[in-house]
Amino acid sequence: MTLLAIGNLSLRFGALEAVKNISFSMEKGEMLALVGESGSGKSLTALSCLGLQPVSAAISGSIQFDGREIIGAGERQLRQIRGRRVGMIFQEPMTALNPLHTIGKQIAEMGQTPQQVRELLDQVGLSYLKDRLNAYPHQLSGGERQRVMIAMAIANRPDLLIADEPTTAVDVTVQVKILSLLKQLQRDLGMAILFITHDLTIVRKLADRVAVMSKGEIVEQGTVTEVFNAPKHPYTRHLLASEPKGTPLPPPDHTKLLITSENLRVWFPIKKGLLQRTAGYVKAVDDASLSIPEMSTLGVVGESGSGKTTLGFALLRLIQSEGRIVFLGQNIEGLDTRRLRPLRRQMQVVFQDPYSSLNPRMNIRQIVEEGLRVHFPQKASSERESDVDAILTDVGLTPDIKDRYPHEFSGGQRQRISIARAMILRPQFVVLDEPTSALDLSVQAQIIDLLKNLQQKYGLAMMFISHDLRVVRAIAHRILVLKGGHVVEQGDAKTIFESPQHDYTRALIDAAFMKE
Image 1 (cartoon, one colour):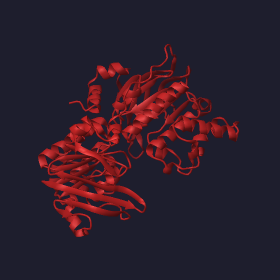
Image 2 (cartoon, helix red, strand yellow):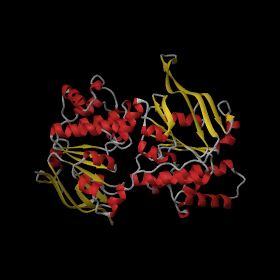
Image 3 (cartoon, rainbow, N blue to C red):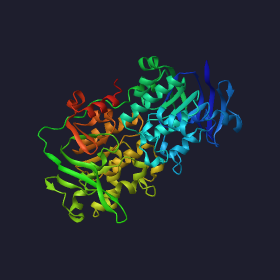
């Protein structure tokens, strides 16, 4: 029986047609994946199913839920559907949950008693939070916040659950748990699920049918088997071919070590009491030893909170640490700011979120040339201009973007700008902190190819930090696995992927590649 029927749906913002005459339907109890890259119109389509599209959007066509028309329905009619018969899991739980209310209060807003709230937490695998109903969203991990959102969405046992990128930017092990939970809830409650994602690996494992969106249009739809085994549209074939693949380019023989660390520690003190005495330590990184040769890439993997970023920042001397760090043959651990400054241009970092790390008040020219002004003040303006043009070209951008600002670019373009800012100084060592997280698969593949080319051209050594082992496999020569601040395994990438020794490494690999 048809539960949701969308016919010739269009959404327009002035002259821009964001969704163009799309049609699809869902049966009770089935899972349909709506797939496409950022900006394709997936989330806008989903919001329209609940009458939540932006007020500035002109909407036409038909959206029928269980035979009732949504477009043009009054608020009273929509309130009878929202949360009761149609639940929604929003993409970013930290912004969707109210930071001023406890999780218990927010789940109970759906009309549940305290006992029912505890039962819901049980149902989504958060039974250990039953005595922490007074906790606030910021006190939970990303995976826990996402499960709280799921508990709210299923509180009234809806007929349809809309899940908008529910696993974006969470650890692969958490992703597997959330996906298993959704599949189980679908079976137990008989729900239909509209699953919005750009990750085709998830779709292959989870969905019954798939609809592929591009530039506001559905270009192909059918069963998962039909679409994956015999894609008809060029865009579908492009998506299927876009997952990061391949292996890193081999480094030259007999390269010398560029940077090493021995027994590196980063401990943060825990202060308690009126006098704020040290009561213990958070051991973010504990006795980490590693080495990175010239022109090679070390992939650092582990879940959130394992110490990956802390390790990278410690090697760059951006945070205080204990232990031995040798860079270019010099022990840099004890160097003060003045003596460290000449080495700064040789070691650079690309941060995880380019939008927050690029100054919104500076244009691209100012952002990219900033390092030149600091480290090469003697350079003439014309030389800096030429260097900026050259590096923008190297990272796949055109020099004519220089007068634009960060907000005018896509996520992938902003990441390229961040890479250009680091590379313009011709460093020998770059730490890349989750540079592809939350990017579309095709953009991920482009960034990986770009980094490989830059490594060959400039002789780079890289530390590539990521929780996505599919991406790491495509770029890293060696792997270091962190868990709770400890190095549990490290070695040649091929060896670790083919025969991991530690249970934690095996769990990460199984989760990343959706192994049973």
